[in-house]
Amino acid sequence: MIKFFTGTMRSGKSYELIQEIKKATGKALIIKPSLDTRDGDHVRSRATADTYPANLIDDTDLHDIWWVLSSLKGVDYLFIDEVQFFSKEFIEALIWHCKSLNIQVVASGLIKDFRDVKFPASEYLQLEADYVRFMHGDCDNCGKPSSDHNIRVDANGRMVTEGESIGIEGEFKYLTVCRQCKKHFERPQFDQFPL
Ligand SMILES: [Zn+2]
Figure 1 (cartoon, rainbow, N blue to C red):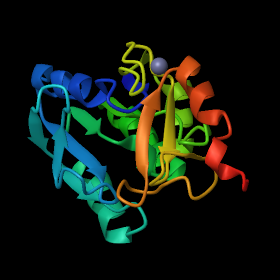
Figure 2: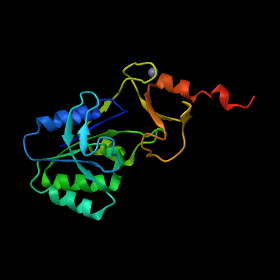
Figure 3: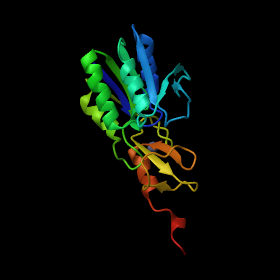
């Protein structure tokens, strides 16, 4: 059984993952990408501030890959947070192993980046999972509980549509917005044109 909680930022994905961790009866392995260091080595729900310790994994490091695959033996559940930051190949290999070892997988992660392009690992899970729940956060602009897009804005609040898919907050700001409000950000801003 593979479950996948996906959607936009702050839509309660990690909250759902934590609920699944709490319900689990058996041995569990919890992993998240070492690329995402915002919460350290914990799975954190922004909704409830609940946290769970997780193993930080670098899927480009052979030692980490070996450690995860060998840790799957004797485990009943594999929980994966922020799955979008893992490569599709790594997730594919994990799913293959979990299926053959009869391990339940519960993953959570963003579906699309700020360019509206699906993250490969998330797209793979969307097709492969037995249960997929698409979640919406509150729109950062109008507050309606129907955010559909994650957008990247620069220091002047202008929407940025080019650049690397993965850019951790700091240099840019990320907003989650509904379809209607995204149009507002797409409109060319007046001061972008020299007078
Ligand atoms: Zn809105």
